[in-house]
Length: 236
Image (cartoon, rainbow, N blue to C red; front, top):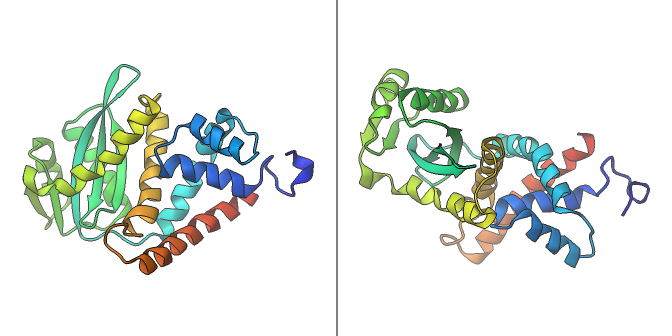
C-alpha cells in the first residue's frame, strides 16, 4: 500500500492507523502482536511504525476523548502504585471517581508531600474541587488536601479505597504484556491514553452492569467518538 494509492496525507489510511492505536491502548497487546494482527489482514506494517503512530497521535486522541467524555463525579479516590522502569522505581499516582472513571494518572519519582501537591495541582487545574477525596493512610496527602481543597471531606482509610485499587489492575496487566515499561515518558503517554480509552470502552459500556442492547448502544457511542477523533488525523 503506497501513498499514491490512498488520498490521505499519511502513508496508511486513517482507518488502519486508528485501529492500530486503539488496539494497543485498549487491549493487552504488544506492538509486535498488533503487527501480526495487521499481517493477518494483509496489511504490511512494522511494529516500529505502530509505535510511532502511538507516540505521534496519543495526545490528539486523549484530548478529543477528554472533551467528549462525561465529567467525573464529586467523589475522588486517589492512590499510588510502584512501577519499575529501566531498573529505577517510579510512583504512578492515579485518581478515579466513585464510578471507576479514571480522572488522571501522573508518573513521578517520589511518594512525598511535594509529589502529592503536584498531582493535586494537576487535577484541580482540569476539574472542579471535589466534595470528597478518599485516600489510603499515606500522610503526604493530609496537608495538601487540607490547604488546596478547602471544604473537601478527606477520608483516609485503606478499606474505602478499593475503587482505585482495582483501577491499577489494567496497568499491571499491560506492564506484564510489555515485559516492563521502557521509559518514563513512554509509560506516561501510553497510560494516559489507555485510561481514557478504558473509560470509553469499558466503564461507560458497562460490561457487567448493562443488558446486551444497552451495551451495544454504549459501544456505538464510544466508537463514534473514537472515529471522530480519527477523522481529524487527516489534518494533522
